[in-house]
Image 1 (tube, rainbow, N blue to C red):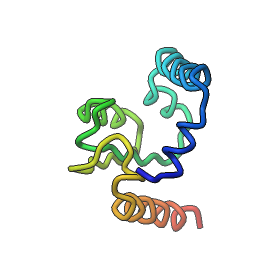
Image 2 (cartoon, rainbow, N blue to C red):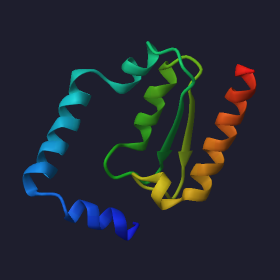
Image 3 (spheres, helix red, strand yellow):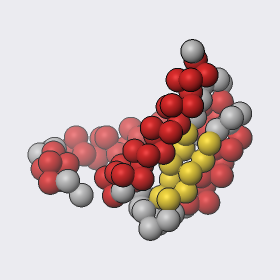
Amino acid sequence: MPQQLVNDVRGMTYDALTATSRAADDYLQQRALPDRLTVLGTPLLVIFGGEDRRWRSSSAADYRAVPGARVELLPDVGHSPMLEDPSRTAALLLAFTAIHAAQAD
């Protein structure tokens, strides 16, 4: 975990931290993310850590309901792939954006 992220979280007040968590939970309870994303009609890459302790990795399959979605499950990675395995995450993102940039031309 990058020290700057740790410092930023430690710099938050208790009220700000709990309010942020509650707001995220409220948002997710209103409507599932795959449902929200389906109506956008844009390319979707889902990168999920196989060792995520916050969300079951099996829930990544829910995103397959989004037309054209690409779902990648990274073994040995937890909830934050971009922090835990930035190289693999970047490789997936770069490949995905290259494909869609070429299609846009």
